[in-house]
Image 1: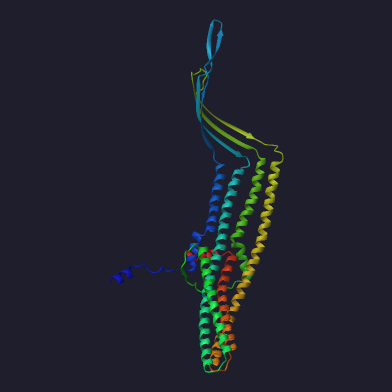
Image 2: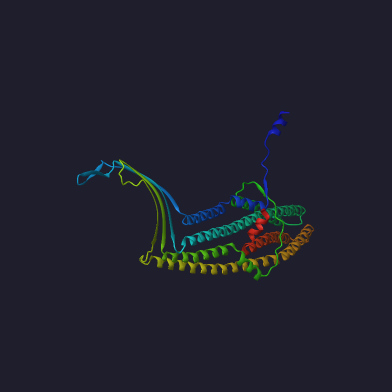
Length: 433
């Protein structure tokens, strides 16, 4: 009873968590530092726009002062037989008040600054979407690398099992004198090679697991649920390019940057306009002793216009700089558009290539399996040599790996086309919601 109690109370081994590709996308969006840094850029742009809005609002301030003089001073005023002392310096004085100021350019360049801030927020959001696409595509690559490594390990285990049976068959034939010891030594060599390949496959799987865990932010051990096989739609290359030019977030980011550069030119030109300053002040004052001419309460407003007509060429240089930035933004957009078109074409051709090779590789695997079974039976009957068995087995292993690589590469190629056309995040959000 004590043994059963201890056995039941002992904690069991940790159960490996299972993740689907959808789960990995969701976790990466929540935990990845790269995405969170890009998200903070949006928050920074929002605060930058608030700074621009603050220039449109009046500034309210309060002020107070206190003065203590060394002594009271008077001037004696005399007219005929009448004389009086006039206070010219009190013992102490104090004042306080409220002030409202508003500074605006007559070109309303402050509104232009707000529009620049709005475009900067839009640009930051497109940058975030582009970073998310790139990062999640890396997650998908790591996910399929793990599946591929697991498949390679399964192939290595099957290969080890076949080579072990081949080695046992070779020993049995050696015992009856049908073959020489050289054949057995070759079988031992192939068995050692199969064991070595299995060790490499296990280490590759461990590395792929660690890479995925670091990229997503999960803790091993874990298992992966294999995503259902997808078939790519068959739009034309021109349709894919049109979709990319309309949907790619990096292109939209550059469009926002172009608009910001255009507005920056308008903002720089606004420096040629005069500045309007509006002020409103309320003030109370008191002193001891009080003079007869003391004004204890004052309220006034003021309007002033400042026109800087010469600043040593500063405004002209700022306008020219803004024009240069505008031309650079336009050229960068056109260059990126050409790059996007090339990326779409490359992803499309890679997809078509991988789609076309899968059927042939599947046929090759079927032929390799039939060939191995036939050669193995012939070897058991003494009709085939050991070299024939080894060649047939190597062909089978190679065909299995090539087909597995083609299948997973095809799924990745579909994702590459979606990323190249700017529809990847739409698919991800549709899966994670």
